[in-house]
Length: 89
Length: 228
Image 1: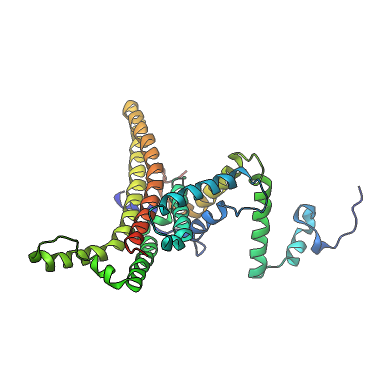
Image 2: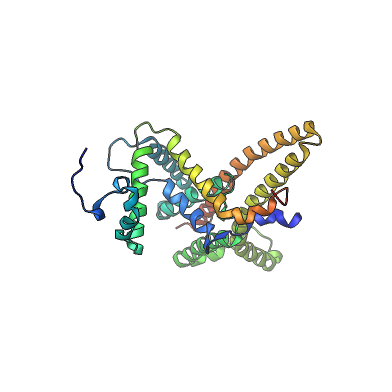
């Protein structure tokens, strides 16, 4: 299936081929304004897909909270690794 | 080993970024703004219902002048409840265990109620320092006591929240360690300890909500006293 020719800078992340990923990153906007805009767009996409549905269940919020728990674990790993039971694994 | 139990309250940083920043922002991301649609999603409906009920409840005894505080107190309640409840998830950090944060919330709000009372009706605000019907000889002592009790309020607000949450988290960690260590040695005792742990976790969930509520309720009481 031949796609229309679209400039690299305008492609969305899911349409970028793996080989082109670094050049795609080079075209993105990494100023603070750009980063905030990217976070807001990602936030809205997630919310509109999983939480703002008429009969949303616990799944949308649960995914968010699980991600938060995993992130907190990564954040605190340097601190928690002193609680190991064996010195050498 | 004793020292490491308090380490959970140290503010963790990763590559220079403190986790408290993420933990403080998270309640904001969890509560979406209502859309202009007539029928919103379930989460939004629940959220709106809860905030309405809560605001009605808290502001019933306060005269209309104090209703300007509705946004402040309602958002404070939601913020504190979500911070406390999120702290019960594993590996997360509870910002309300830090005394600095709680004092930062308590002192400005309490001071605002006092200053508003002093500005609007200075005589009545000063009159609060002496309850009606005190014997004449006790008047100097009582004024000192009432002044002290006025100034100790922000301290009590902040420390109450900190102490309750810190104690709860510490208990959970202690009992969980006990259950874990006892498991290979005495399985029955370990099961009993695990039951205690389960009940304690339920209690902690309740405490999380109650403490936030008490904070906001007391603030509204101080507001009411000033009779705006």
